[in-house]
Image (cartoon, rainbow, N blue to C red; front, side, top):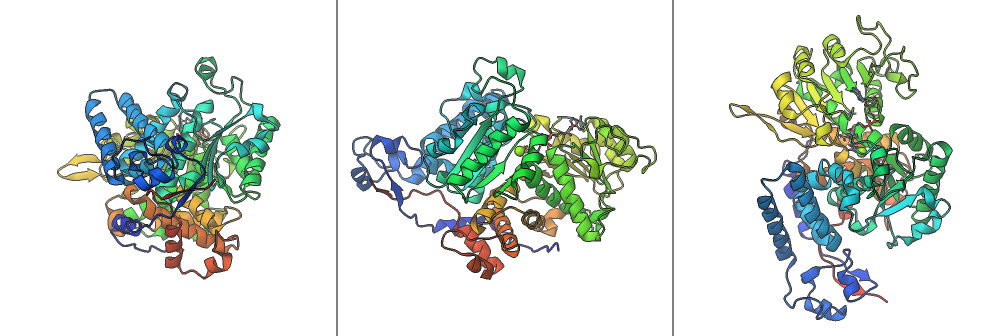
Length: 603
Ligand SMILES: NC(=O)C1=CN([C@@H]2O[C@H](COP(=O)(O)OP(=O)(O)OC[C@H]3O[C@@H](n4cnc5c(N)ncnc54)[C@H](O)[C@@H]3O)[C@@H](O)[C@H]2O)C=CC1
Ligand SMILES: CC(=O)C(=O)O
Ligand SMILES: [Mg+2]
């Protein structure tokens, strides 16, 4: 089942080679002159060749010298580096926002150059357009707002969404990321300001999965906010009312989903950062009706499972030992429960036993250990609730420290959204773990919400640990030339491939089988040598390569489940006849690459 295929080592150079020979096809525009210069989809700034300036009515609207794409790229990077130099004494948050602003201005002006810069510098720029800086951007969104991006559907638009959806200028949309802003990273309810998250996720879709940026749509469903500070903020740009609840809420989401799939029946909708009750309810409500998934529940689960399997290998054990791993999960929200469900399914498949599959997993929330004695036990958490007395001395609501001391877990995995909850005392207690190589996953975002820092983990829990965090940390210098490797356990390793594989297969729905295939692909991506060093996930530099592999696995699972209806000219039979390698090639060929296309005007 877990086939540990080893991929060639130079994945990055292979990806680069694949795209170096891209010949840009023509791009149809329906505008001329300044309208083109003001449209970031088509604008090339000073890069328009003279012949194109003549054809499109641009002569005289630009300085006469034509600057090549490479020169434009270099100019941008020079200005970025001087900004870095000029702000080096400023507080981190000021620098982060300044970097976000310079990237955002390019995004607003020239998307081709923006995405090229982003792709080629993904390691440096992901922390700006994605976690952690995107969290800061959301917190300050109303003040930072200059131009809209994406679409906003509010509770006041009830009954209008079917026509509103046609206000979006693109004929085709492939990928939509939707939020209601109710649980933005670990920052809570940010109302309409949460739109930064769909924008950042879709930037990752373009950079990692090569989804054409003209075919992505970030969406905010503004149903109000319960954040009192925002409601009182005179700059706040969202509806000033408490969140809709119950049927009123669901009617808004239903109407939006009907509108989207009426206009774009082949689109894929990713639900992102919904508070737990709506995350589960909407997943359940739509997953057999529309092509959609919930990234926080399902994407996170696959990434965590891949990391957990990597941890077993890092201990020098085989995957068959996974069911024996004692795993403490801190946080019983959409992410924590998603991870446990997938991990339990994996154990059940390995052992063939459903009843005992959850026995080595321990779940805690803000009230401590969850047992069957919990009052008002959430049905979603019930399968993981312990029998009190199952472990001597562990009672309902036992503290995290008590649980760690008793259980001596192999893995401590945090998805609580609470910064620092893995205290010094707790990390020291992990030294008594039964594992030869305990693992700490501090997966909450952004950085300040991580359960512990990388440096603290290695300092207090010991140098032999495996460490992963949701937001990036620098590797830790352990002295004597030794390095404590920091992994980024973030759903960014899977959601782009889940979306891409579903898109290019033409899948009708996104099933557990497709998600499992994605997780297995990620789990098998790393070599034993890498895993021994504590490296559980690929470098983000090779994100396009891993996304193509994940996308191909998802596609093949969709074919196997007879859900693939084909994409473009490629029908379901052709998809079914592709070998594994051919499928990866097909997925790569469907990726958009940022390069200027000749613009052809049609009236
Ligand atoms: N690394 C990644 O790829 C991902 C990370 N996350 C992060 O996970 C965090 C949680 O997300 P959700 O599950 O959607 O949130 P949620 O709000 O649904 O759940 C949070 C859970 O943490 C529990 N909790 C709160 N304080 C606690 C404490 N002191 N000790 C133990 N448990 C505590 C709550 O009771 C609740 O069960 C967020 O910070 C989010 O950014 C979420 C998805 C993906
Ligand atoms: C990474 C992500 O999806 C989250 O923190 O919510
Ligand atoms: Mg999320």
